Amino acid sequence: MKLHFIDYLIIALYFVFVIGIGFLIRRKVKSSNDFLMSGRSIPLWIASLAFISANLGAQEVIGMAASGAKYGIMTSHFYWLGAIPAMLFLGLFMMPFYYGSQARSVPEYLAKRYDEKTRAFNAVTFAVMTIFSSGISLYALAKLFEVILGWSFELSIYLSAGIVLIYTFLGGLTSAVYNEVLQFFLIVLGIAPLVIIGIHQAGGWHGVVSRLPDAMVHAWKYMGSAQDNPMGVDVWSLALGLGFVLSFGYWCTDFLVVQRAMVAHNMAAAEKTPLIAAFPKMLMPFVVILPGLIAMALMHTPGSDYRLPYKPDGVTLDYDMALPSLLAHDYPSGILGVGLTALFASFMSGMAGNVTAFNTVWTYDIYQSYIQRNKPDSHYLRIGRIATVFGIVASIATAYLARSFNNIMDFLQLVFGFVNAPLFATFFLGMFWKRTTGHGAFWGLIGGTVAAACTHGLTLAEGKGAWLGANLHTFHSTMGQNFVIAIVAFTSCFLLTAFISLFTRPHPEQQLVGLVYSLTPKPDTGHLAWYQKPAMLALLVLVLVLLLNLIFM
Image 1 (cartoon, rainbow, N blue to C red):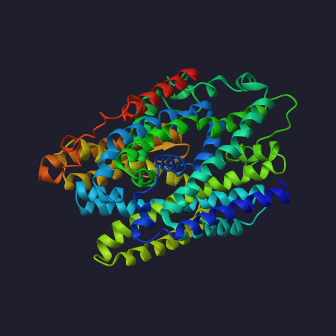
Image 2 (cartoon, rainbow, N blue to C red):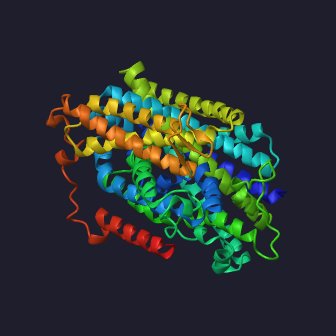
Image 3 (cartoon, one colour):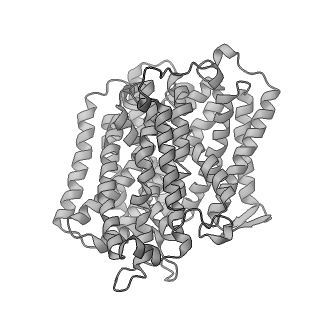
């Protein structure tokens, strides 16, 4: 891939712009709340786009295109089944608790609902996970640009990390949020033309469909058995593992995305943030998944010289290169710069989201809670900025770790399954059963995580697992194994939490007002027009998602 002056100019202008946003917002940062929580002043439409963009990082832009090439349109389940329902649940049921409790983070909500040991467990595990996730995004970016541009690994890492450090250090979460909105538009505008060009080259949508196996162009038709579809899952493991446990565990409890709704300027905006975000979210498969299908279709299109690169073994297709290779093949100079800037934006958006979530949890839930209490606010503002620097440096170290251990990506995906899955069980019980206790929640989280680890250690998928010395079951794919692990983690945590709660003392009801559904006043929406009510927005989203599923049945 050869870049010209105009391409470098576009990339440079993007860097200048994002740093400029940091300098502009710096003047408004007067307190730790301004730096770490944007003073809860973000407008609804900004919060909604930032909500999506915080999740629009390396794994989504590159990973979903790769999954589209490998699994086909079934990858859309990660959106229409694995995101939208959970986003609606977050907006309608969970945001009133998060926002109304005045908690500054998800771990702080756990402290209010349960106790400090539950908060500490979640804060530490989340802080570690954000650093690893940020580092993996950084590693993936550096590796990608090393391959397609010939840039050195170090140059890519330090350039990207340096840009993110500057604008997050200057403007904190507000700077990250406004840059995430810019990055959202860049990603869409940089990749959407590629889809249009690719479909045209393949002879239209009919041409794409006719050149791919039938199982790759249907979302539900081949879900009867795990052996019948390229993803290697059946409808029950998909619905329970992805559609319920993993999706709700991520969208409803992961502070990285929840934070974007928590910083909205009022309760109504916080509730609507994930609901509004669901509209563009349901259309993202057409931007990030279709390039993968197009790449595979072009491989079998007469007269096309496009070829998906192979991995170093010369035998296995490198699906991760589906999107970058299409950019190099189809975009001329100038437009290529826009496409590459979109890739930069996606990686930096994911990294900034993780770093700003990390510095908030570190400052409020670890440092202020357990290390230095009752200090002036200026002290915590300074700690927040130090945490930002530490988070970037730790991400760089993690990126080098990923370079040394090539299985760390699979490891992170696995850990996500057995960390977030039991956490959702803890939240679900805590919000809807006032009898749930802190002891039950803490030991339920421990038990759910251990049960998930044991499930992985006693099963096998694509050569991974069975490290406990026995193989009780072999899955058709790692995807199928991860879905079952999530189900086991959720169920174990749910049952153990409920059992222990029955034999331990709950909080008095007066302490649970605003934290448990039955004890919380419901928002009054009677004065709103029907189309402004959150429930109607959610219903409209569900109807549209159902139509998309029927179209690609």
